[in-house]
Image (cartoon, rainbow, N blue to C red; front, side):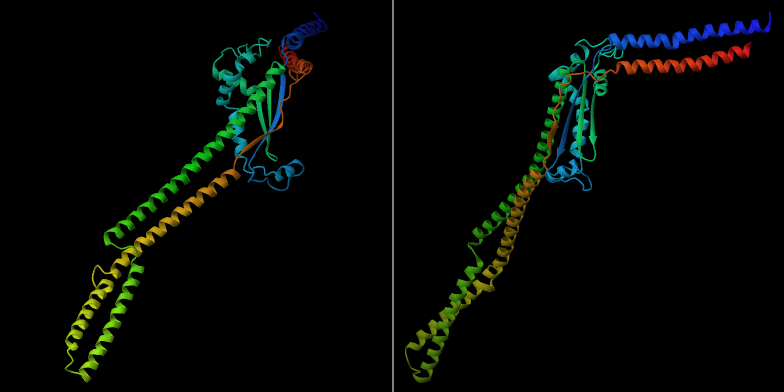
Length: 379
């Protein structure tokens, strides 16, 4: 056998191998892809909506243009905690449970003419557990946040236009419920805290008032300050009478030493002095005097005044907290309502079939080179 005949046989063998590789690497995958995307794959409809979460007290950072500056006028929240709370919730199992209870999304994704490969419960999702449903759900629902404007874009894929719109609208409603719940929880916690402070202040005032009232009852006085003023007035009047009687007695002893009124005047002077001593003791001298009682009374009055100030401050804080809560309330507004798609956006049938064809060509080319190299090495 000549060299040329051997080369011809090798070329024929390589050509035969190459044709088989082309068949299995290019023609068969492309035909299967064309059959699936052309006749089997179900239409996927996409409903899109946009929403924003904001707080009236907050404002977006400056430097943005267009819509961001417009939103700054209505006070869009800068910290975005409400936005991410809604984002995480909409893509959570809790939201899916709410959807399942209200719309039965598992039935939506497993029926309505969905193809046997991509539907829930199909070849790609053989089991139908809740976790499998959650994985299916997160692959068909997205929520993208624009950090510059805090506007979120909610996208829902489904096998019918109506289902995609209904799921999208229900998710927006769930987001509203979450915002209402967050506001209510913040209101209840803040209200409970400041109401507790008011209750403590009221209890303190009540205690101080009761202690003061008990002291007044036990000491048989209302106000030591005013009562001591009255007692000093009485003491002053008695002292004036004493001075006048002493002067009168001195005159009688000097002018009429035998006057029979001298004895009665001396008794009157003695009586006045006793009254003065007794009145002085009631005001300042004795342990139970008004002076000693006024110290305790002033302390109790100070405690009562302090308790009243605490109560006033607590009530002011409560009112300020309520006003602050109103300003810090979160709001969610729908910027773009969920649309009802009139055309399927997925799958990209021609593009996907062409991608399979190009990928098959690449694989076929690589394998052809490998087969030729091996044949040449062993030949």
